[in-house]
Length: 273
Image (cartoon, rainbow, N blue to C red; front, side, top):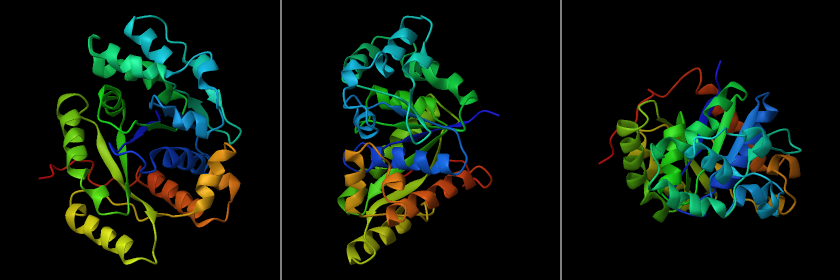
């Protein structure tokens, strides 16, 4: 049985995409799943977060694999895959990916370049999680064209909700024109503070505006300074502080993601006005 590819995407920066990809990945590993992470952000934040600080010195990165794909050459993904101490794997990225975005403009079947690189890896992994860049550019479109599902992390702030409609419309467009099997796994509230009315109000607004159209994960990722601390050591929050509320939230989220295999939320993306 093939695994599932999930893109974690939001065109806004600083909404917790990278943190979610890493920590959800570790939580899935702890639940007995085999997991590959793919860094599609030219800034390479996921690569750095996981402890590979000199990404320019890596033998192969995602940009190299995509170049091999574009030039119709053999794709040596085994040489690019890095093995993290927390038992999950990574295809890293660096600034070379910025040049690749420009090269894709003139490439044949440009939306499927990433898919040709990693799709066969579904046979090896239960889950492939893609950390998308904070844009809706060609690399992100490639990620959506490759994925089975999308997770949308949203900060518990009013302004964070403003870009939701544009993002969902982009996902709809990719579904109609490129990847008819794409669906939204759910929306994930990040930096949630149960003590404040702001977080509660944003949660209520999210449910009232999108709850009838999209799955909203019950798990909410709380604010915790130790999440930032863990990145200094190349560790997930689950390894750095197992009893932290953030660790518990990502473990809960992983069970929701696994549960989606058995009970899907309709499997459709509704058009948002």
